[in-house]
Image 1 (cartoon, rainbow, N blue to C red):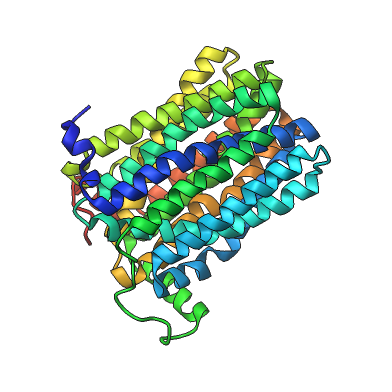
Image 2: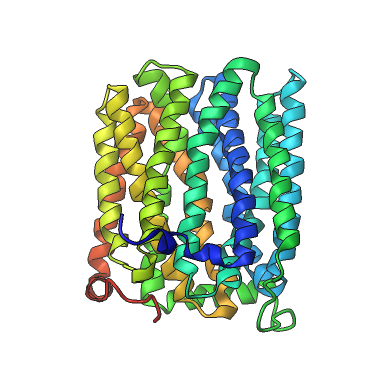
Length: 418
């Protein structure tokens, strides 16, 4: 791994980022426990890949509908206060899931309602936290901060599912939701200790209505060729190449003929690959932004999706899923950094809202697509169809944007400033 220990953790020299990062270290473990428990709970209740895919639609659908106006509010108000409110809402949602599960009377529709509440909260939380990094560390350490955040997200993807699998096997899903609610208190404490509010540099509250300012953000992306290409690639990858959470439980059950413990292991391997990828990205952040990662990581992910669809061996499938996690995080970090560094301060909340819209908000479409493919053609089709369609669309986009692509490859080590 390139770079020294100090280079890898450079953003931690900022006091405010330390409070944020260590709070996230605790909270994200609980978040991934909840996600893992929720997915397995729904699949155990319904035994339907289509209904499992529908869960993702309800949980991510609000992100699809609300991200753009949410980004306007993030550009209008102090980001720290917005994030405190969203963390409180997440806490209450987790406790409600725990109570519902422990009641022994949980119904599918009730889980969908709570998933929708989670999605509404996420629509405001995502652009708030993504655009807050630059207030915590400045532009110089932004790449490193984004990568370090990815390390804890993906460490949580390793530990969270493994712990959730053990807890579910021993005492059921309820404690996973309760523990998640408790862990949000660490984030709230860190936010109260942070000394910057992320106050917008320009007061936008009286400069047009929400929809008008949302359109300004979209125009800002459209008129910048690099941002436009980045958003297109993120959209394709999010819809067709990042549905592992929905496919893995069905693939584990129907193809590998394994149970909840092995499901947790495969989810953790995906997180392990992403963690290693994030650490590599953090260690090389001092070298600047390499936009060529946007190209080759997409192609590698498509190839892995096709390969894992033919795997009937758990060890081989785990290896391919781990590699998929590494390439996905390298792609996502590069896309995130490209958008943040190529965006003016007054537009950052709206641009990052649009990024999260296509990165996470497209999940309902991807989940529905993967669920439908698995329901019609079997679990392996979730991988295969996604890989083939993503590759075809990526090739089309890259060919149509070949002039921008040449510039991207010629300036692969550029700082990211337009």
